[in-house]
Amino acid sequence: VATEADLRLALQRNELFVVYQPVVDLQRGGPCGVEALVRWRHPQRGLVSPLEFIAVAEESGLIVALGAHVLRTACQQLAAWQRSLGAQAPASVAVNLSAVQLRQPSLVAEVQRCVAEAGIAPGALQLEVTESLAAQDETARARLREIKALGVRIALDDFGTGYSSLACLHQLPVDTVKIDRSFVSHAETSDYHRVLIEATIRVARTLGMDTVAEGIETPSQAALLQRLDCGRGQGYLWSPPLAAEAVAPWLLQRP
Ligand code: G
Ligand code: G
Ligand code: MN
Ligand code: NA
Image 1 (cartoon, rainbow, N blue to C red):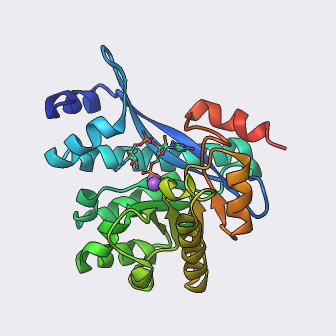
Image 2: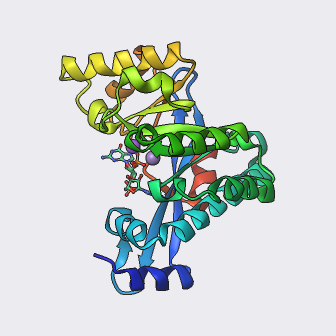
């Protein structure tokens, strides 16, 4: 496991980089966006998973600098794709936010600055927060509302794994609900999981929210989620997270 000192050096030496997983429109077909995910290329240990360093970054407070770096990189990358690909560019980029970032009053200005400096439309940026975080406290929800007021979109990540429920969804300032991959992986074999997915999609739609199914790995899972009226999908069926340079070729080879 990484130490705070390792991570501090990694930031200074620019060893952190961002990969992008395509998101597809399940109803119309075709790509509609990407999710930015941070990676660490350690000079000795090779690729280190965020599972091994996000917690360290949160405990040490380094997540604020790390998160700002990912946010700025993702916004700049979307702008670069818009310049080079025009209408074929991803329509949006999603960036994961940690609870620690959401507690910083400076986050709202930081988000606004990243969007403005990149010159992208605020609505093309989506920030992902976990459901426990969004449900947690009124301060977090107020911060999310400030970000939403900029025109930036908010997604509830890993839905179904936290403590909030469908009954709370209407209180949360979110545009999109991301159904956790643990539900998607059981959707075809468990009535309970399928019915819960169905209910989530219905409730989200009723509230004017869009839905994304995570971790789709097979064509039959994609077909089921499409039938259940899920808006978007993401998973190894279409693509794993890709290096930034691999995204344009992936987009251009799609029918
Ligand atoms: O990409 P991968 O499946 O290895 O990511 C593992 C976990 O790390 C996921 O829960 C993902 O949300 C989280 N993660 C990846 N990139 C970031 C990031 O830039 N910021 C935060 N806060 N979490 C991230
Ligand atoms: O917590 P979050 O949803 O941000 O995590 C996204 C993570 O899920 C990424 O790190 C990515 O590597 C992983 N992932 C994306 N698609 C799939 C998939 O189809 N199957 C599995 N097992 N993991 C996936
Ligand atoms: Mn996510
Ligand atoms: Na997730």
